Amino acid sequence: MSQLQKKEYVRSMFAGISRRYDLLNHLLSLEKDKQWRRFAVSKLPPGHIIDICSGTGDVAIEAAKKKKTEQEDALLVVLEKAEEIKKELTAKEQKAKEEEKKFSVEESRIKADFTKVENELNKLLKDRDEHCARIGKDLLKRYTQLFESKNGLVVAAVKNGNCLGCHMNIPPQTLTEVRKNSKIIQCFNCSRILYWKDAS
Ligand SMILES: [Zn+2]
Image 1 (cartoon, rainbow, N blue to C red):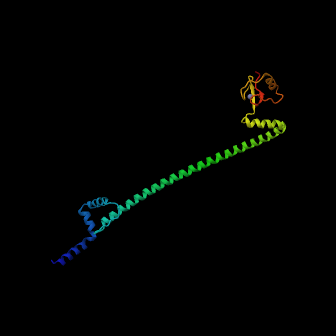
Image 2 (cartoon, rainbow, N blue to C red):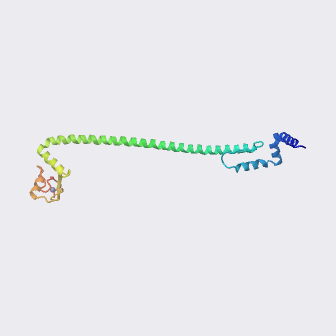
Image 3 (cartoon, protein in one colour):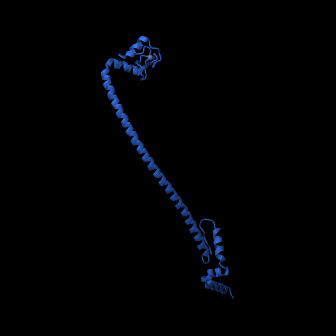
């Protein structure tokens, strides 16, 4: 048989069995070839694979299945992560809405308190103006000076014979005058306006 005839013989033999090549492999190996192929493909490194002299393409098909499975697994991981992020985002949005609601309630409460205090202050200022108009300019001037020099503590009680503003002992004559409560009496030491606290 010439070289050319040998080539032609091999070509015609493979052409004859090519349609049933895989079936023949399954039968002859008792389907072990499928396991070997899966094992071989499982050992392939990740990335692109080029199957040279691929025969019937069964290894390439198996590798493509593996690649597809890997991509599906990776996609599932991404989808799970996306779902997780979406849940976190929803929870944070809910939390932000709750905080916003609390803030709104607190803001309304503070505004109401502020308005109440402002109204009370306006009423007190109005009362003060009315009282100031009645007590006379000289006494008001004296009060204002004391208010500034005594850090707002203008009046002091007399208790046990002492001025509770400076704790000095008040002379008996002054005590009598304070007790009468008929005119403005100031402490001889701290100048605060005195009022009677107790019967001692
Ligand atoms: Zn005093």
